[in-house]
Length: 100
Image (cartoon, rainbow, N blue to C red):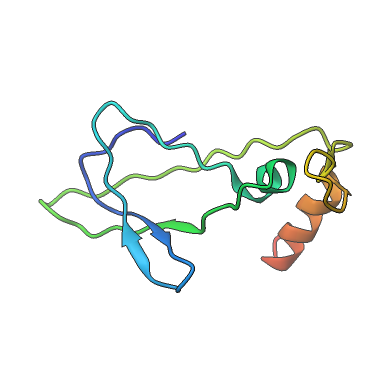
């Protein structure tokens, strides 16, 4: 969950590969559900990033918190897609980015 921030920096990537700035009203929180939730629901995950544009002499602080399903959870079962254990999916992603 990302609470409201008065500082810019959150961006999403369009299907065409363009980065768009995200602005939200003060009373809105953003929930990034990610690829595991996409496998469960069929709703595509959105590629995003946080940049530090240094406006108004203030920086944007971003600290991710990752929450994963039980390692034995079958992802994809609800959508009828191919199933994969959450632990296997996570291991594959960590290996792809070079941290496992």
